[in-house]
Length: 326
Image (cartoon, rainbow, N blue to C red):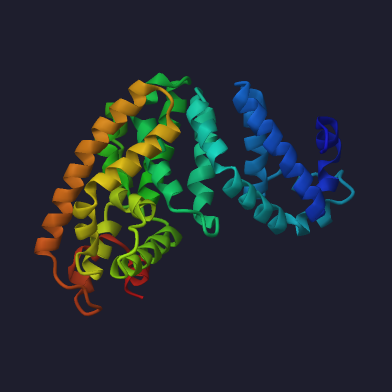
């Protein structure tokens, strides 16, 4: 394994080849794990800053004209990102731990950016990680005043949490968790921010899989269902398209959904008081969600290409509606 000195002096050489990149990411894993275990912020955040640079393509290495191999490095930029996405997928639990363990608003902002921006780009990522993302963002809004930072740092973290929920079609759940009046005042700003199309596509595919399992009377894939309960529109739209299937599942397997969701809380948060408080809020949120899906199913039209403009599909853009109807 490469040493810290090797990493600092020769990283531009290692990144040129797949074997070299493998060594780089082994080193980042060691730094990330060691930093979290020893609660050394400088170690784990340094690893995450480098990971962000590889994912965004904004590493100083790509613009350092003093490097003899700068043009070869630039050609490898997409391969570096591909390997960085693989690292994110493999070590996502550690990165979620870093998010919770961080006490500084700036650190949560940076770590949250990695999760919000790049999870949809990871191929075959289990959907349960998106359920965790909703929980992390809700926790952020609820406990924002307990994190360290300036008022601007807190405002920035609130903004990325709200934008994140909007991008994942979940802005309405923020109302249940927000504790600061200034953050509640921002809600209106993000209500019409469109969700990630790639994420909605994943949800549509998940419901098709759930329906297939349901029809064949196999075990209900509860972890694929969890992210849907946090969505503002996708849950209701896909429920209509699939003839109230999701409503049936939501009520028939209510206990199973709650148990799985509360288990995710156990995995994410170590402090009992945080788990208990978030669980209490989630219990009320889920009850309201069940009432809403019942009401929308009762009053809904059958969705067809002809009447799509007259349903609550209008809350989404044309391309988004096409995802669900294709």
